[in-house]
Length: 197
Image (tube, rainbow, N blue to C red; front, side):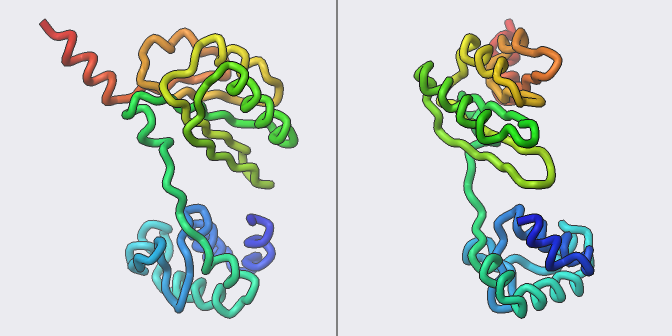
């Protein structure tokens, strides 16, 4: 998709910035307006969020709608609801993986194989393997990821970095040169209040 945007917007860097924001956030362009599903997004708020003036937004909408191939794509965009940000609040863990370029397909298949073999229930998978930028995999685990399973996943070649979003403080031992553990702030707060005398 980024190659398509680069081809159509190579002479319009400000419009490309708007188009990338729309694509990344699943905002559609229909009938001269921008929508989240069927809710119209105010142009002034969008311009403020992107850091451009409203005129650029209007020019981008006009350009998208008069360019047939862009119109076909942008009128069908929708945001996907996801569990990634709320998972630790629900007692679930999220494994976030940065993948080396060129190794995405093999690494993704290997992770899913290990999870299946270890009976780890996967609730949601979100991944992105664009030509530009880091390839990422987000896996929402029902409950917590067993340490042994995490160790097997860490041994897969082709990964740059792991981040485990978790409600469990005991997972500190998983941190190494390319691993990072982030705690659920709600769980940490609950632990602090329940341990008071």
